[in-house]
Length: 102
Image 1 (spheres, rainbow, N blue to C red):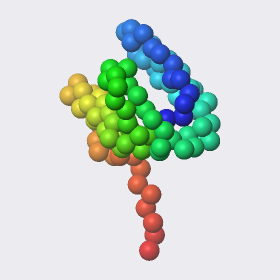
Image 2 (image 1 turned 180 degrees about the horizontal axis):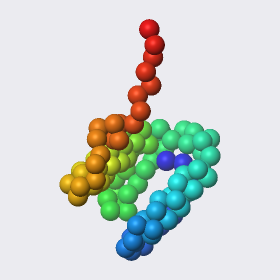
Image 3 (image 1 turned 30 degrees about the vertical axis):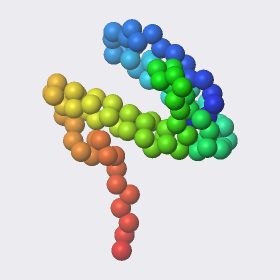
Image 4 (image 1 turned 120 degrees about the vertical axis):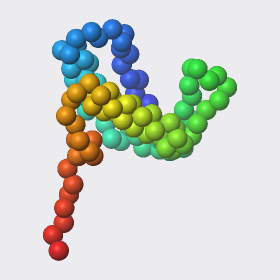
């Protein structure tokens, strides 16, 4: 979405420390991307190597592909962790609420 090429990973992590290192490097990459690099993304063309000859507009990519893909993986990971005995609840998924006082 920013035009900055994302780092590639070998997908060979085997230990928790390796997964944490990958997460840390991903967060560092995301923090390095400047907000202004997203300017005009809604009308840019996004292409996929696995679907040659087809494309999505930036806004459609975000709404129809990127966000659903993110939430699918987040929900799947949440379910796997719960299934394996980690005590997670809805608040761990949704985060803290920003209550307003009357």
